[in-house]
Amino acid sequence: GAARANRRMTAPAIGGRWSVVQPEFRPMVGDIDHPSVRYSASVVLHDGQVVVTHGYFYDHDSRKPAWQSDAWVYNVRGNKWQRVHTGEKHGAPSARYSASAVVHDGGLYMFGGDDGGHKQSMNNYVFKAWFNELWRLDLTRYTWSAVLPAGGASSLPPKRALHCAVVLDGAMFVYGGIGHSDTWRFDFPSRAWSRIESGSENTARVRHPGVRHAHAAAAAPGGGGFFIFGGSAHGGAGQKPLVFDDLWRFDLASSSWAKMPAAPSDGLPPQPWGLAPPGRSHASLVAAPPSTLLLYGGARCTPGCRCYGEAWVYELQEEARKGSWLRVNVSGAAPVHRYRQALVRDASDGSFYLFGGESYRPYMYHNALERLQIESLSGSTRRAAEPVAGATSTPAGSAKSMAAMLPAAAAGVGVGLLAFWLIRKLFCAPREPIRLYNLAPAS
Image 1: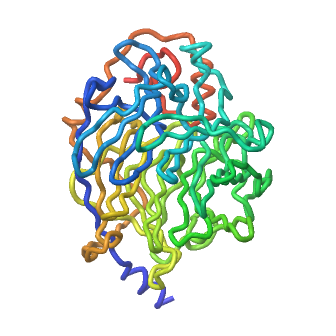
Image 2 (image 1 turned 45 degrees about the horizontal axis):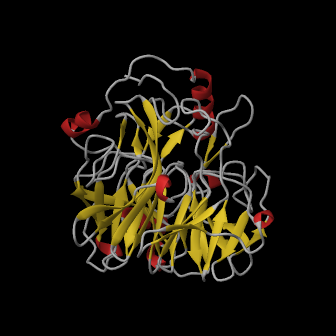
């Protein structure tokens, strides 16, 4: 009663500040000194460099899908982009998006993904054109190599996209993806795959997160497991897609899942301050040691879309706010709301770097690099601020800059109308002329 009300009134404030490191660059295709716009790219941060590879966007100038396979690095200290690999014609994995990416022992490991069948049909999306290949980009020489499994092709996980992967204890763990709920382990030294948890088809999702895709994931800050947040699942014939607002932890020791408190869908008060992030897919979840998770962006599409641009923190240990979501009160020029972006953390100073993604209302793609600094997650003194009085946000950014970035209109409706409707149902895709079809933009 009174104690709970007092806790609600004295919710600790989390302050953060956004800044633009590299502004949006046009033309969308980039140039020799700047990467193209793209979303669902594979991105990691290693040794002071943001590494970006693969991804997708629709090139409105040429009216063609633009599948990416090149690789870029941004040197945080040198403030400069450099293209380090020109793509599949020179040994990179074929162009794709929605693959997972982790960094381990000086390499970026990219698993799975989806290429929409563009090698066979450029303008019509082919469903289930997924991969189960594992590739490594050497982050010193910037050369790609296929990582062949010790057990042969039969030991590989099923093909998948929109799954997640994290690195823990010298291994990579993969969970979910479209139509999947299983958990796999890849041991780096032995190159051996093993399925450690077979998944669950139970739609109640009480003891297991179940089948889902486009969820966000992060290794537990203290080790011993990993977390996933949100995501989507197909709702069945004639039903809307399901969009989740739950947070789950996978425990390595027991190979089991546990649902964390603070999801409004639990039917209980979500957490002491009465706030929690709305359900969403295609968000970013990043661990901030020693005991915090940061959530950013994403979209809720059922199938009409709303993109989010706010940041939230979830505390795992600190007694005063353990098991609580708190929304970050930000200053500075906040990025345009988006989904399918990448957010990575520089452990040297605790800064978070945002790259890429796609926005809905306004319709735009991104290739700016923006930085979020949160005092309480970087060792600085927490900034005093008023508790946020709601669980949603209005996108920030000047109207002038938004208008300047809007894609040019393309004329005519292509041949993929039925497929476009289907993909919106399946993937929670916005209504703009994106990705895989030669469609006119919404106005």
